[in-house]
Amino acid sequence: MIGIAVASIEFRGVVKRYADSAPTLPGLDLHIRDGEFMVLVGPSGCGKSTTLRMIAGLESVTAGELWIGDRLVNDLPPRDRDVAMVFQNYALYPHMTVFENMAFGLRVRKQPEREIRTRVEAAAETLGLVELLARKPGQLSGGQCQRVALGRAMVRDPQVFLFDEPLSNLDAELRVQMRASIGRLHREFGTTSVYVTHDQVEAMTLGSRIAILNGGELMQVGTPMELYSDPDNVFVAGFMGSPPMNILPVSNLGHALENRLLQLPRQGLERFGAELLLGLRPETLCPAAEAPAHWVRFSAPVEMVETLGAEMLVHLGEGDERLVARLPGLRSLTPGESLSLAFDPAALYLFDAGTRQRLREPRAVVAPESELVTP
Image 1 (spheres, one colour):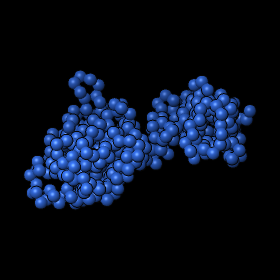
Image 2 (cartoon, rainbow, N blue to C red):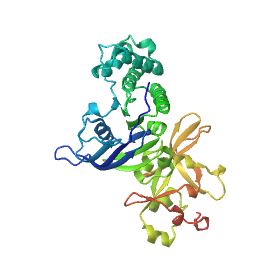
Image 3 (tube, rainbow, N blue to C red):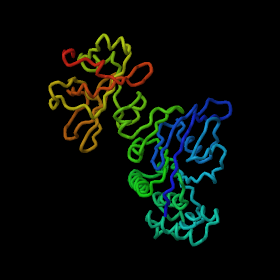
Image 4 (cartoon, rainbow, N blue to C red):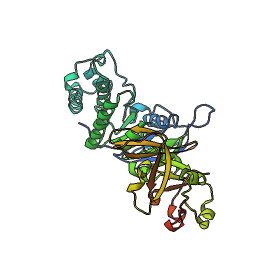
């Protein structure tokens, strides 16, 4: 049913400004490749939905150029862009049946009835909606309504699919099911897709690549694992991963790690400056008794334990100096007790405290084992 035509999308210095306010997007440069599944993610107000709506033609471009394939679309109306959008609120017509809802866009474009029926029935088969075609939206569950909305976009056979937080109204179990369905459809048809979400789990599950936005600025673009393992800055490090990366000022590390100091060589301080932040993923921490001899060991009081079954999230520390460890869940911990943990120095990330940018040569700054001071 779905054709193989795909299209790249390119933002070239795109600015979006409302009236006399500061720009929502001050100048976006982003290339979305033919056939990839790009996820736009970030906190509320970061500009991700505005970016999606500009692709759809629902928001104008203040400055710069927006290309879909080989067409400059700045002034092209939505109906001529060959894109289909799935909205957060389904946007189904309550007085129409499932079949009529899915067929509506094709009828507006005056497609032949035989073609409309063929396309709708094929989409219904793919999405498991065949038994529901005669029902109206009021007779459907939330997950079924979202599948109808997805089917309505599919029958258009567009060059680009746009998804605006389509799963946010569903419960947890349905979100997992619909994520799987959307991912399977993309693998099957390969249509260029742009998906907006604030949920980094959705982003990492679905995205071929992820673009992280903050305050209208593009923080980083990459595959899920690139962003997780090689963040460019503190924002990306803290946004990707659940729970997020632990960030500690190096100047306070001695207290946080009970006087187990990481010494910074003089040339490191001269090269990068003394104001540094240390990053450590929760899953890189382990019980000290299970760690190799060269790992750094420390003790900290347990503040809270989140039991998740096979694993637990242990919140440690006091005052302003806290961190979270992801540990196997088959143990009993009591708030207030002292827990001894360890980590591999090679797992550390270093950031400039002023610019919040990643220092790409941590081994040039972190001292070798011989320079680690023991209590």
